[in-house]
Image (tube, rainbow, N blue to C red; front, side, top):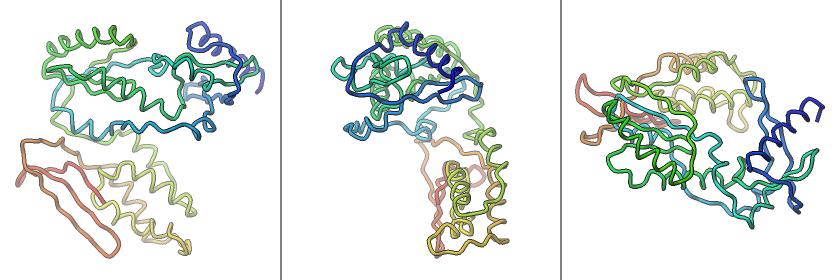
Length: 309
């Protein structure tokens, strides 16, 4: 580690010591540290807990899927987001387990008194705490997602009113929310792809080998629910990633590659599901692919909720 990074590391360790998040220790456990660069030019201290995680019994508590939360949310024009800064560090580590979190640095060995990032069960532990936080909030639509709490309301007055019991619970659970942001939403538009995520995909050049083709398809696959007939469109390219298939990038592959980009440039807007209306499922199949679309509405009001395939 070069001198400049050592100085950065020392400042971060001193900060964690001052805030009571870590302490010096003597431990038979010793995970290595990694300084990860951030987009803004600063560095984040991370602990490589891979060895510890390999011998950790998994906590199978489920994490929410963002798409489920989007469809679970009611159609409301007002939203507020509460962000719990360093949320994991707001959870105490059991005294008997603190030594297991120990990490080594040029300045000594330290252990966490508060839950560190990188532990196998940290996300499950924190999500359980946040779900308990939101349980029993009557007539308040609060959606917890790890260190974020999303509040949705029909009016700005109701939103402000709902924040009071949320703040009271923050005190009860000894949690600190450092930032609160509110938006007025055009909920009639539905669910759209984030243009920033699409922009990075549009800059990807045509693949030159199987590994690059797999990488492109995996990236696009994150947004496949916005693309009708994704499997069918991508078939010429996905075929090249199969075993014992010789790499030959031709017209069909280039056309599929560009079509996927075009679909992401002008993706359909998905509507939130309305539990009071019937659902329509349309399917399609070929020798190689399956496709389906979940819809609601009739005639000109028919709209897609999600694509599969």
